[in-house]
Length: 114
Length: 112
Image (tube, rainbow over all chains, first blue to last red):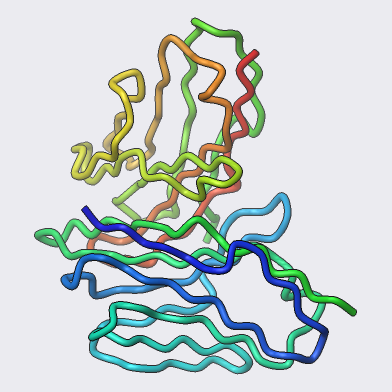
């Protein structure tokens, strides 16, 4: 089955700096890669996603890049703010007769230092 | 639209007991997936239901089971609880083949 590795497990950055979280996946058939943000005590929420026919996607301060050859994808947050502090999860989905199943990474705890 | 609703929010059980958790998906969503979240393990997939049928299953023992009703509401059952079953159980709903999953707030289960 699919295996998703996520690094780093913890990340601290100064407010205003950029943060990068990286994930690798094992199955080249994976074609959908979402990122979820989970604030303390809250539910995971989708913040951005990318499909395998696209190499990069941006949404304001957040961007995701995908390298299909190397089987890795990354989340980039620019101009970080205190409200960006949370746990971030990457995931990968393999199409299986339409029954896509998400496999998650183990999460990155991002702390923004004021 | 109302979001994904999970009940109860908190549960305390003792070893050997069984527990049933409930998940009501977003209106119109027919797929419901269940995950176990523990510190350091991230989100581990339990199973997914669509139109009352289990479509996918993760690597959990048979003590973990689920079902889905005709209104897409889903229940998850854990029998013969063990201490290691203490976790946050999350469900997520999506459209058929939509991939975008919307999570509920979770049920935090503590096994004593």
